[in-house]
Image (cartoon, rainbow, N blue to C red):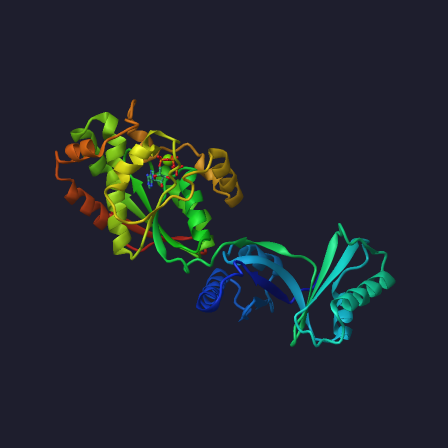
Length: 400
Ligand code: ATP
Ligand code: MG
């Protein structure tokens, strides 16, 4: 079917928002959309209290829709034709823009926001349906139509649409503040990042690499994952932390069974430091209770004890299959399962402690001066911005 659309009508999510919050929401959504659609220079945007309109001008409707589908804060959107607010114009637009040559079942659903319009919704439905029936072999089916023709009557214009595409939901990224997410090459943390962004949190990511024990491929895999989730917020800054020295020190000074717990505590200290440096108010992880030895509540207690920042663990109570479903939905799963070693897998002890004790962690850590190593990790982290056009720019020199 071939329709000629000149607009996209966008419906906001979380409609319960009121007053200043709502203004903030709309403002941010508008900014995020413009940023995400930077590649389409002739687009024009108009934000209203309950809708946003994107004027397509010369841009390709499908390509624009593909981008809009990833922007949080949108409940649904529809390619639309904008016509004069008269019944005559509506009927004209149907004739011109809908290809009636192939038969379909249909229904018409009109909504009057402007109650002063010459016809009420029922009468609009009937007028449009009558015209389609007269000019084609289309048939009405009110329960399961193949095509639903939506007609939205506003005071200044009428919008004619034939589909309603589900939006990404959630809040516009940025209304929820900033956080630092720990991004490994696994399945869980990209999903956690996605879910945080969906609640309107603007993220930066931190990745711990231990070259030469971890390879360039493992590092590329993380960038690839970052590239897949970056479009949800426009772009994404990834901090790559050179973790080797600290990790070797842990193995040198503490028993193998505590290595993972101590490593996680160091990761948290570094994440805390970088988060503060980058004005983030929380730390996010892909931890999920019970999944591995380091994700028992005892373990989480030991790990959490080194930071006062709020920890956000979006997948903490999800089953693995639920997490995998989301990973597939956002397209990260296939990349996550590529078999490259992570800094955690390289040093995985044969029998990690499942119920670590904080006092023991502290006793082992008292054996060497780790603070300086932690500071080095924070200061030597390499910062890479994954931008909306997918290219990776090094903002600082490569420090490895
Ligand atoms: P994931 O699938 O996200 O790797 P996981 O099930 O493998 O998680 P762990 O390896 O125990 O679980 O890691 C728990 C969390 O710690 C991860 O979700 C991630 O947030 C963080 N993390 C682990 N390794 C790294 C790393 N090398 N760099 C950054 N964050 C990491
Ligand atoms: Mg992992």
